[in-house]
Length: 371
Image (cartoon, rainbow, N blue to C red):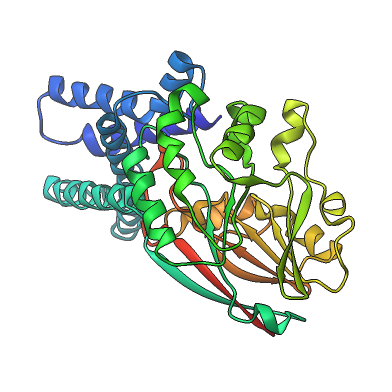
């Protein structure tokens, strides 16, 4: 259904934007084929590599593919707006309205420029974003506690070792008390990504670096990747918790598996199991890759949930659609009962849709304060 929708969207651009241009038919046909092939790069990757999540092609090819895909998407939106206005005007004037070629040229220049900007925003090393979150019953010893949240790094042919090196250096420069990574660290199997994930071993924080699996870990061999993260010095949490201490004061850091785990015959998320045995007086910070089950976490007694997965919706307007698939949660802070939820826009995003407009990536520094 996803690939069919993309095909229809591309055909709309060809029929309503490319075909009416006063160009030779051979040129318009050539452009139509190029756009259709590029816009279906995920399907081609699925057929060639067996997965649409990690095409093993040169980085520059994926940048160009995302640029042209962004052009098609944005052009479709603009052309639809033009067609609606033309229909309204035609109905009012009771005559057919023609669209001048210069308007199409202007739209093409605009959408190609916006698509190029969107790709540049998607693939950059994320800027630091400071967030302050207040927690009930936070011990005084943890007042001012600084946590870094990384999420959805999607280390791949698009986000390779140099990008990881820069991101790690920027994270370490924050001198945080704790670093957490809320899933989807990779796209690709161990053999393909070994060199690219190696810089993660340099992450440093006073209380360590902890991670949980996202849905993409399950697509590429969950057990192997979780073992690899441990080898790199990232402590993995799977439906369990650890205690962070400052003197006699405690903070519970819990983590759950992704909801996709059961599709692969593995244990799904279990908040009750994750919190079993945790001291009742210690505030609970829960790591859950997807935000959709935040209400269950609130009912279980979590004080703060950190999630990713949505990439913030990637493009303003499209974020409303992404929210519908995540129980209304897409970006930023939410009050869920007595719990707070923070949904991170993502440190990077999936190689197959590397576009950002109005929804910046983030390297998030969260400072805890008592409520």
